[in-house]
Length: 258
Image (tube, rainbow, N blue to C red; front, side, top):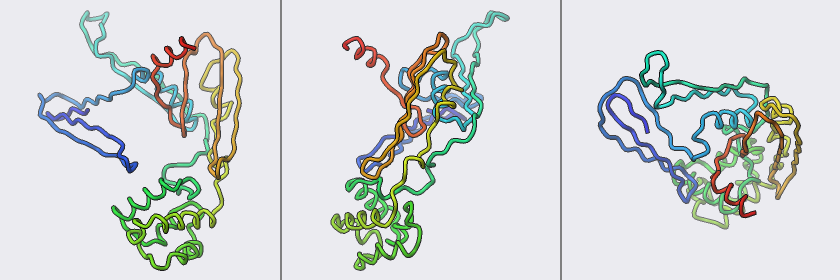
């Protein structure tokens, strides 16, 4: 929710069955006030900015992370009045971190039959392009020769909209694309690394393990670090360099049951 210039903007984002994001925006009139206020609903655990700052910094050693928070009610020892107080935490950049960025092409090997069908349908129904151009968008298939090799097996189709209601033809195209490009290796995903994790934490002792491999031509890298310290507490977990949220009370209940 954003409040600014006498308006309140309530924005919600939900995932659709097709895998897209549906944005809903409602506007209402409120009393005008100086500045802009932004409210974000967060799970219980992530309600603490310090946790979010450290979690983000742990999974992104290449980034500068700074989060400032304002307490709604703080007491001033100078004036005796209530006032807003700012607190914050920051982490410096540690160095480069190899990872696949959102603007990089994805691999045809990463799509199941259902996922690829959804992708083709969305492309053909929302932003129709030639089939060869669609193929060249994928990792390892940017050359015209490879695209022609694939589309040559589908001569009756010129546009994505010509094929997006033909599941057998779509599956044939997916398999042809996979055969024409190499699978992405785990090294391309990048890893945070033991040194970068330790640089963010002040641990007395620790254990670290990294495991990588391939499952059905899809690469993976797992990293785990268990540490002991008097000054650092918490459980941090993430996927694709992003901190993930969890239900901490539920975890406590499951631990008690165990």
